[in-house]
Image (cartoon, rainbow, N blue to C red; front, top):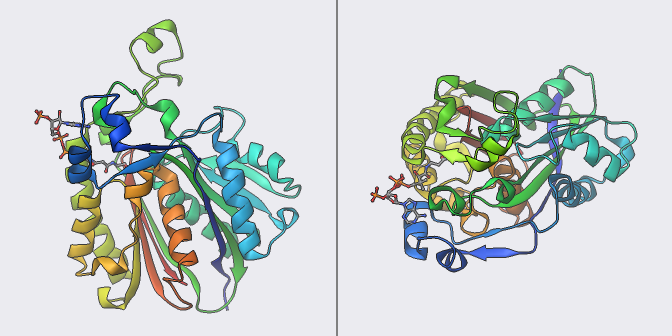
Length: 326
Ligand code: UT7
């Protein structure tokens, strides 16, 4: 029987400081009513003096403990992030040092909000090929450092956090059944952070022009997201020969409650079978799915052999799904 990969432990962490919609009303021309109606978000966590690797460390410790795995037993660390500690070295390498995971290779994946599912697909391939046996995959973001706190169209949306999973080699029916990855770079400027890279290296001009902050064409992105995700979830289930009624739980990227509801409606899934926590975290980009997964696992909302569907959409544009038999 061929190898399969299975998530054997989950963990998550969010910085202590909470910023509510009412706090934001005092910073920019917005209201709790607008943010709640348009997004579903009520509050988000904001890192103070913590970098992405610090968030990764806390989430990872919980995931390793849940899996009963020692850091020294990890073969590979993958961190999905677009707000890593620094452009080089990778946040995964910094996490490796902090964990003392002496035998692990380490690298980052950047697919923005789809990053965790891109990382999951990479991890699954590594394990099924037999190359490694145990992977620590983390989605972590400190988005608050890359937001223009004077731009109400973006600063109300995002939050900081990290979610981690331990993925181990297994045989049998349970585990990751399929992953699907997509990108359409023609819409790269729908969500971007244009400054600081080789196209627009850091300079006084990039600082003055606020190019080191997230820019988003929100409404245009919204329309593509709804259309794309509706097709993605239907295609993923069809490819695996599953009916929506056989799905125990949908774990979507947490960007906007209206997008989540539209996807659930397309599958005729009641919201009781959809993981939603964006009201407490905002959009934590690559951390949103692993945080939501950790919460439903710890709440006992998914059981052995349940089918769960994960889906994400974000900058790139990128989108991705994963189907898991828990
Ligand atoms: O995670 C990666 C993928 N990202 C997404 O999937 C996000 C997709 N987009 C969205 O979630 C939504 O488009 C937003 C929540 C960003 C915006 O909602 P919308 O319903 O698309 O609003 P809009 O951008 O069309 O703006 C409507 C109005 C505008 O005013 P006018 O032009 O109608 O007078 C905005 O200026 O709302 C205004 N507005 C605000 N008002 C109060 C924009 N931001 C705010 C705000 N507070 N924070």
